[in-house]
Length: 491
Image (cartoon, rainbow, N blue to C red; front, side, top):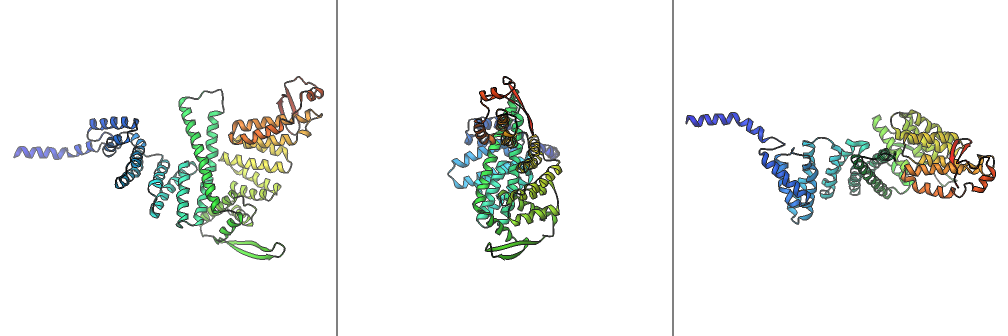
């Protein structure tokens, strides 16, 4: 009896030790079994034998959840393989529940990349758990969390599925139009930023043609190119669906008038046979920050829909700039004037935006480009060229600024030179810029090729060049006009 008592005492005192060993999240209670299951599941996974991989993988998830991060990278593929192959509906639902829980366990055991992991979870919820309003709302909540976590760095998966699930809820009258408008504005901002930032990263890899990329760099480049492709598809999807909802500027204005944020006075215009509207006081929510967000998002939507000539847009951007003058609010004021072809006034606002932006090079590039574009339209070629080159400097993979400069060179070629031959040299300078544009920016390739094709027919002929230029055998020619460029002579 005394012997049994001693055994019980020893067991009780060693219970915490035994318990801590079983709580080893990396190796579980049995290291040999853990390693065997790891080896077995890994081998079956490589063979894409998901049915055989499932049990050893499941054992590890339950008993050694920190053995390797691969459990959470491979797990969804294993489970999806089983979900697609089973005909047992009850079993399928259990597997779907397990699949969704894998993402939560990943964040618990391997914290980090929260926005990315939530996007994957939301995507699978959308595919397998979106049959009811409640499930759609749960899915949207996960994707919204992902979007808010990653912000401007949100993935294409987040953007696409967050908008899609929101659209479904809107179609089922569970989400109102104002919420959908807000989402469209937020998503569009992220898409534009991601397109520009990823393109710049890709350019960083490709800009030096003499450098050989390492295998790690090639892999990173491939991932960037794939993500850019997904972002571009998400952009098309979002815009296409939004255009089905808002088909005209009149409809957009009517929608926002219905939100009742401005007082409206109407007066019948006999000549136009319609009411002229003036927007009076802004109806504040009582929270300045919320009001500014609403005004900014509204302005973004009107810009996206190219509805900047409306008086409603003018009222919104004017109030936005008065309440909180920023680089972006100045830009929006400039866009209104640009749309109204009041280019000189637009330039002032674009310059203000450019000078006040200090942190975001993508935005600074955009402000510089619009300054250049407006300056070109009022004949200020030197200013246009200067700001276009600034735009190119702040966003080195953007071809549009060089397209603009090339067009200016081509348009003024006949004014630069003292004889019939030198007056055509500007076309060479223009074509150099078009070539550069398409080299650094594939999105400019089609326009650049067309311009090169058009202007290549206008360059000097060999005989014209020999008959008019003092040193016709020189391989280069320097253009001294409102700009200075040295071009390669070619026929």
